[in-house]
Image 1 (tube, one colour):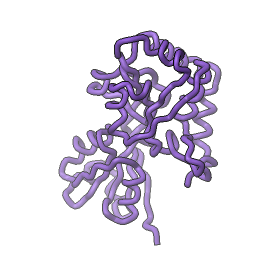
Image 2 (cartoon, rainbow, N blue to C red):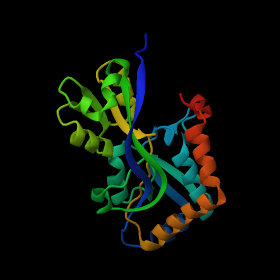
Image 3 (tube, one colour):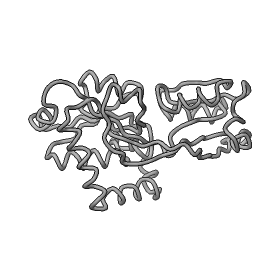
Length: 243
């Protein structure tokens, strides 16, 4: 029998952004010249980014990336990798932008520029029913008897380390890995963005940052971003597309 799980939303808001590099050279010109926009994503943070039964990237992040590529008149290429490898790949120039449920932090912003936000999220906790009562207050999880999982190098890791230092913390490479641990009762709680979302990009030159920011304003002004939110965050039809 599958263990019952419960979701608890915490009042900790975080803005989901695009991360963009400030590397030398005309990044936007290079994207247009090669006719391809390379987007770094984990593909494991539904409903923002996930891989469907056909092996395709779907989700709110994916739709925004496709819309950006269409506006640039280039193809979009999704480069899938573990969450904690995304910013290093961006800094190394292996991707042009990261859109993968990444929240902007002061530390990250020292290395990369962020454009947005395109969504504002809070922290959510997924827990076994046995531990649900402790979720009424975050401090109820701050005990050595509780085992918590968080995505490695994420703001959720920092959140758990700061507010629940006494709990045992397990860092995972993906949400799928963490949820599997939850069902196997290897952990009591998973801390993550609620919903799993954020968007980040590498340090780009000012022109690309300006373009991305203005494009988000365009999506909001035309109502397209609202439609995307409705499809991926309110509706559940996309769940049938998952393996």
